[in-house]
Length: 547
Image (cartoon, rainbow, N blue to C red; front, side, top):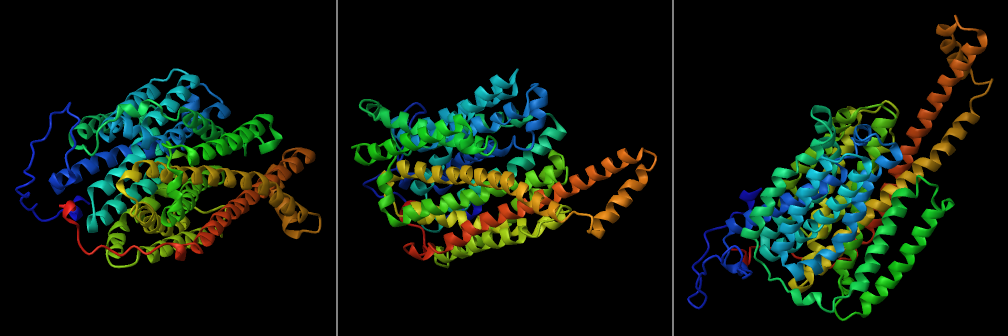
């Protein structure tokens, strides 16, 4: 992909602005973008993308291996789910704070510190000795690594313009949706081939590379430690409480029957009250830590909405497909990974298509096509039956992979492309937060559908199973035949148990279809808002700064 960013040799610098030697490593001097070669910008951007990729990959890399991790740490299923939940809660708290942190520490030092912290906590996760230590290290891993995600968005819009920005946005969009998609695939393969500890050890080498290279290459701003004095620490506390309680409510609510559980009720009310207090304070503060005023920009507000919707689609389908394959088909971690691998393949294949379209057509139409394709992929998921495997999932997953590539990058450009550089840091954190919130709410909604609708479908199917049903009578007779050696009462009980299992399996399968329908409705609704976006003309050539 770097070849697409290659430009003609840089023209000589004007006499009034002679080229400067690269500052020493410890210096905080900024190198103007105009003085950077395309090669340097691509190398710096690519290194930051590696950090973003491993941070996003680790959201889902444990999802297919929670049973193995629980077994290795002698933990029950309820405790093991916190291996993923703790990471999500910590990451979702730090993402909106990353803009303010980057202003304090500078982009280069915050990114390097995030990469180093992520690497060290990855090592600690692999060395965890019990489930409590694992949960603590995963929370630290998410908190320390989460800042890498929004900073890539900010730096890309500082470094690139014109056609180069199209390629950069396509790359970011691909990573933002591809990394979570590949998480179960990579995690399942590593667990089966090596051990669950290597889910974390694979981060060590790329993490160290990012830690060393970013401070050398990325010099887009200076640290400003004076921001620590008089910072709005109350807003930070309100934001942390709001997002932490909200994420806990969404993650645990489906499991504990939502407001039927006292803890869920308390965390939900705490999230609501702290969220309202945070919004009120952020809109009145002179120097807010999250730029909610950016929502006055129509494209940014709608872009955040589309980021929320695509988060629902990406994370909900990543949740649903492996769960179906494991619960209904009985697939292991590696088989699940192989079955869902086609989504990533088709997304990567769609990157050149997006680059071609984005340089020639209105991004709003490309976004419309991507959202429509996402809705179509959910429609193709809906006829799902209990015997679906990799072959039957190929078409809907191929459509989803293409849809992700045609919907996420244009949202990035339409939402952030028109904002001035001074607002990018604070706004990009909010933009990325919306995608993660969409994923959390989408997963929670799908989990609730699976819990509630399974009982409904089972009852409806059971109503048809009566003495007058010839198919049922024939099944019981055939099922009881191999058990004829048992006493008549035992044989009948065994046959009824088989019938119950088959009925439950079909009820669960029908419920997955309902969940895919819910996701489809979200994307159909999102299509109505696309015409409200302001048009951004496709770039005809890179600007002078892009060289």
